[in-house]
Length: 174
Image (cartoon, rainbow, N blue to C red; front, side, top):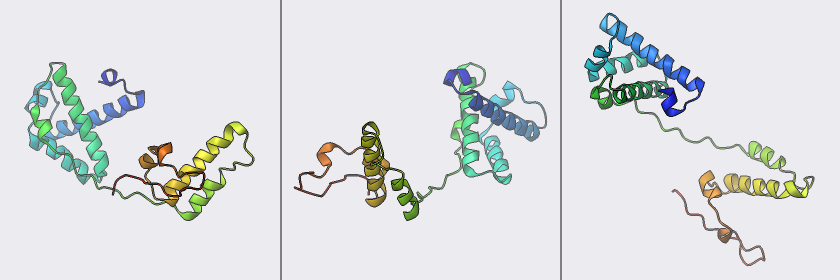
């Protein structure tokens, strides 16, 4: 499975752990060793029992969702290999994940970031990079732009540096 996805060694190790935990759960749930035939006979209720046990073990919803995603991938792999076909795993929904609100940068942190862009002491080769970074930080913090909005700006949207204007039109979310 790791070779198919060209995953790192750590990812493959984590997949192995998650599959091992799932198989261990099934062994306890079914009362014995788990065979390929057992995997093929699993019902949605068996997968929900696994999710319920993880929830009872106080795992974060995100951890449970990730672990179940590994189980789904495992079953897709088994099906591609012609070993097990079980559509029940696809009918089970993972726990809903709460949408987190982005954390705002404090005024002190923004000032500290801008202090690190000392353009006057930089070489000519670095000065434009520091000026770019300072402009980007100012747009992100001072104007409330999202990173995608700031990085998507074009020269045509920049204010006229000859004094003809000082407004920018930003089109984005919200």
